[in-house]
Image (cartoon, rainbow, N blue to C red; front, side, top):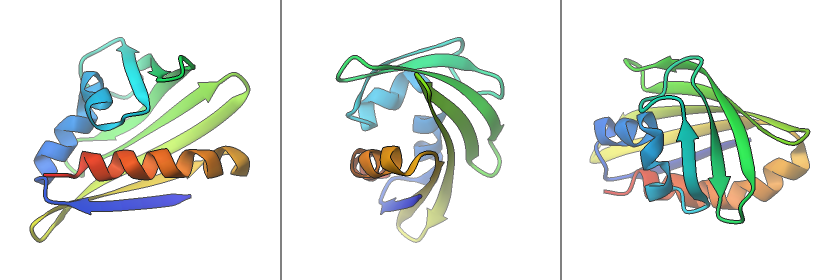
Length: 125
């Protein structure tokens, strides 16, 4: 599944919102808290995301490219596994973000709406 959003936020600012897990709840309303073993995403970083419903998802960051504003992480909730690839792009008047998610179709269908909403908030100026 591929989702995209565009907005007026500068791409450097959008990247910083991604790069600091403590900031994820500020733009992703389905996230209540993030517990990570660092303050900036890096390859190998591990942690947990706690949803508004109290569901905890373990994660590991697979790769980070600060120059290309691209990062990949794997998330697990029980037996469900997702792989999420995020990218930030410069656009006239702001930025765009792209999210490619791999996982079970039924989970992707349920995740699409909240993810789309969060991405819109991420790139909002």
